[in-house]
Amino acid sequence: MRRGAWGAAAAVAAAALLQQIAARDTANATDPRIRIVGRGLANDAGGWVFDWPNSFLVSTHGAETVTASVSSNGWARLRVVAYSSTGGFTDGRWGPSAVVNVAPGTGEYVLVAGLGDDKLGGPLAAPAAEDVTILVSKMNEADYNEHHETDARVTLHSFSLPGGGEIVPVADVPGLPRSDRRIEFIGDSITAAYGVAGLAPCTARPWQQEAGRSHAALTCAALSAQCHVQAWSGRGLVMNYESEEPGTHMPEIERRVWGSVLDSPEWDFSSWVPHAVWVNLGTNDQCCGRKWPLPSFEPTLAALLLNITKRYAVAGHSPVPIFAAFGPVASSYGPQVQAAVKAANANGALAVAVDQTAIFPGGPGRVGCSGHPSTAGQFAMAQQAATSIGNATGWAVGPIDGDNPVGALLRWST
Image 1 (cartoon, rainbow, N blue to C red):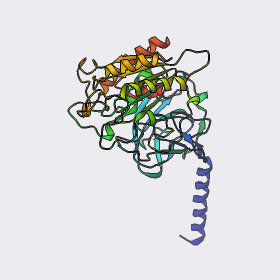
Image 2 (spheres, rainbow, N blue to C red):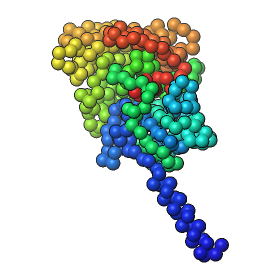
Image 3 (cartoon, rainbow, N blue to C red):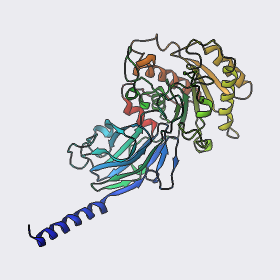
Image 4 (cartoon, helix red, strand yellow):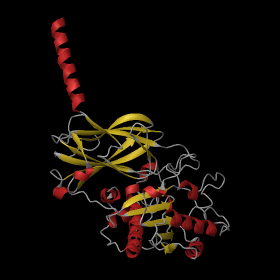
């Protein structure tokens, strides 16, 4: 090729690249067009820093591809789902989902491809549609089964449309369920859905955990509520699973913006006030052949219930209802939970003890990996939790789809 022709070709290519860059709509994670549900903090660049399960809703018009710029201090897994109200999916329902594995470091990840012309590509190939909403949810807990805090924060910097299109406000999208109902869950591996994606006998692995399959997410789906979930495998109220490596206990961890960071700032409890709180702690405290009961367990739980009551107190309103559950993995801490509830209520709390010990023997296939609830087990727990919370709040209990994490994530994130 002659030098002049080469120069002309290069100029054309450069112009095309500049045109593509100019057409690339990018929005920081905290852009008001995007909706976030979950604990975290914005950084100075407009990114969102978190480690507890969080969800993001991003709505697009005329896009072909959606990418996300993500930094992570450890591994993380994201569930990606696409929704269209203008085509591609029957009756405007959520479509198929895919998983994006985030490696340590910073990278740009393709979330969805093929929106404009129905071609395959990326982890999730969505049918052609003019208007598509992407749901991105972190599947794993703050710091998977670590006995000591190891900074596992994830920063979602921005979403981009490299093939063109426009990011539009989620609030303007028709058909997306909207709800101001809020439920908070505080727990351990049972609430974190440790080992949910398997059936006993099997050993739990990181890829077998999914927040969207937990009874927390399923309960929120049934009650059309947003969820905040602070749960950490192996942690207890006064004693953790690994007694020789005691670490920090849940009453301290659950107050943090970032559970995996020792010097994390405390969460602003006034920024998200739940209508109900579900607590299940005690399985790790009574494990491992320890002499039970631990003298400090009952008063510590009563203090936690009172702390929750005070942090969410609203003048002129009844105290927030708190459900202190025990089971299904262990039952010996039940009497202490019941006594703690009685003590807390005597000092102004509105708490009730919930016995979930019948979940495991109550049906086939309810035990997953490492003795934890399977999808069926989490489903049964959600049925009981949704009924209990629904009765207390007056909310109608909708259907629960324990085999479909997409349905749970939808309600969890709106």
